[in-house]
Length: 180
Image (tube, rainbow, N blue to C red; front, side):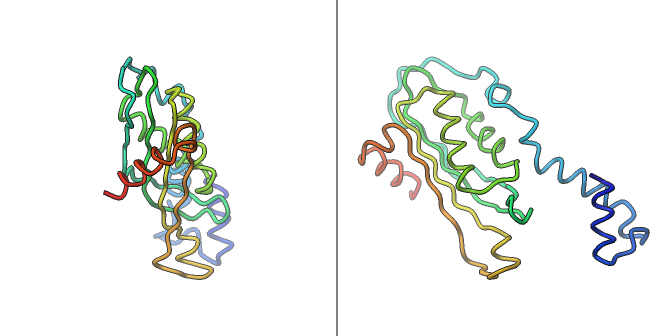
């Protein structure tokens, strides 16, 4: 990867031996590896058995989980927050694991629409919940720094599974809670 970054920098017309650029290919490769570390993670590793018995059957919500991802179309960042809720059926997942699941999918080359679905399906798989709701709000650098250059545009995506899809009351409760 380091060699490829050197080739890209040279293709831009830069001198790869210039003082400020000497170590840039190595730094860029290290940064890209970090930004896409989700490929090295699995759902089982992330959850790590942190499932606990619970007789709670009311909504569990973690909101404003910051996320940083990379657009698979332009390799530019998109930055935002995720709101994740589920209705337990006999067990709950450790609180930090929800944020870690978000990170695992965000730290891959991604489009927001697919990431939203992947997070919802992973939470459903792990918890066997009665329902899962995920809403993601993000700003995309591919839209802000290039192309249409719209600085204030943001994208919202949602995925509703189980009772969040079937019950308007459950969906409305979730949407109300993320607005407050």
